[in-house]
Length: 129
Image (cartoon, rainbow, N blue to C red):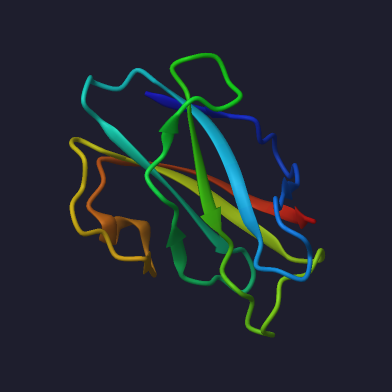
């Protein structure tokens, strides 16, 4: 099993919103080797100091990678200082579930709290507006 993304090691993530607004990422991914019926959610957190993981909306088919691929919007948590800045970095995760999860929390301290079957994490990506 693997999850392909457009993020390389230390590549920046680009906000789809102006710097004066909360940062929203439009994240594409392509799962490979998963059973039919598995579902996915994208989560993001501030890298340092680590914030809570914030879950994005349910991904939709599409995205910028070879099918089958998905796109998901997720809002970056506000940093301890109260705003996002270009000097901050985020960790991004794709969490797999054996079946569509019900009643997921908006955020968690640890990804294991979500009850997924696997999590694919990419760390320390600078934020660009």
